[in-house]
Image 1 (cartoon, one colour):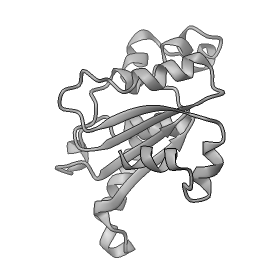
Image 2 (image 1 turned 120 degrees about the horizontal axis):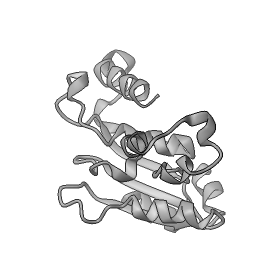
Image 3 (image 1 turned 90 degrees about the horizontal axis):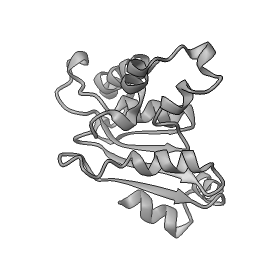
Length: 161
């Protein structure tokens, strides 16, 4: 699934002129599984798609799972069949931070401590070459503010960082 998302991004980037898309303004956003996919999409270089730089300028991940190790230890692993190696490979929290992509990882105020821990840990402050990234614990009402044009000053401020 991650590589399918990356292939779609690369295709959009290559075909931007024909589609009348500004290739310099591509941004990803996702919630839940989409947040995980957005983080994984920007976590690897784009050389395998014959792109020299990162086509994605920023990524917004809301309430995603960025560390699959706890999932491996849950009942869900019966269907997923994750092992320690696949958890590390498929967990954005263990990947190097993107070099040329700003990242905002947010968790909701009503989300579990584990979701909030993962959002905070995904910041990886020790990644010296990483582009700016922040983790943010948003109040539940922010989602409706963002869906109506980010009228909330905290949301606007976080989006500008």
